[in-house]
Length: 477
Image 1 (tube, rainbow, N blue to C red):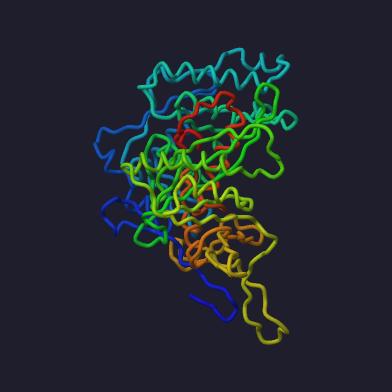
Image 2: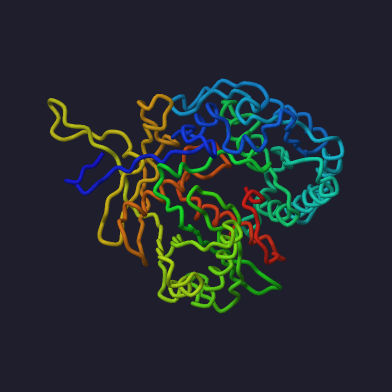
């Protein structure tokens, strides 16, 4: 649909693929696709005996509650919310074509029985809890062949130790950092999951995350319908600040190069070091060349040594000339380069219904449609990634605004290098917003290139000895 008179256009909702060869197995709604076709990687785990085994780490008295939550995933659950979007939960095996079960007793580790008392007496209880959890993870490494994913349960009484703003401590990120270094995928469960009213919602979110963390691929982008170039690489950059031996260091995170179907969930990180203005994190030409060169190596590893013909780089501040030159140095002048700055302006978007009899003006309607785009000039465009996603509802007829509150804000896309239609840039970002496997949402507010890079950057602050090697994103989900 086009409304060119006003300068707006509506981009179609990107479709998702649920089978690598059968191109009829596609859907707009990821949960409908899973419940109808099963996951994209179902054929990898199609043996009847395939079971994903879950290791447990929780206080001994709370282990039964954690087991009860995981057992719940095996059984069907009726939805009681988001009825326009959310299907009923059929059970883990009907959805993912694989079973879910507990690991053996050696991989079900209770936390120390005196932990509560130790936390009450500790000078720094946040760090003590993080150390205890890290020690539990290290114990699990010795039985790594007996499980696929580690599930923690952190009861509500530990909530005061989850964060400390004064020291910039975050328990979630600290635990993920240790787990990543050990090569363990983890899922943290709190009381919010155990007590949430809609058990179908919990099952979809937790079940999808566990399947992905066990090595499965729930869905990919439908390459026949999405505008992503099959010969292109898509990269997101984000930044983290951390202290090394008392001095402030600057870290650049680069998410693994994504290809045309959204695959390739690894990343590399590069220490820029001191001497950089941390309020304006721009890279020198040499730093950008090194970051991009590492990303090129990852892309080539996944594509039999082949280099991409096109490079698209996303970040959340403007690209400087030196950064653009560094990208060209690493990838070569033969590669078409696009550098896209993605920010959030103060715009809002709603529809207006025609004035009714007796009204003096049009009436405010529903949220603006997801995929609405408005070109501002030759190099910038507004894109509503968040908005009314009517075509992705169960019927395709009902309004559905994810979250249900507030007025949707667009992203401002500014092309600092490159050429071509901005609608194509916007369509790519809209598609990449659907590649987060860590929840049951239709989309994320940012493309996966940037969202993944942000997650990795946040976690890296808690990794003092980051080894210079690629990391699978599943380790940080």
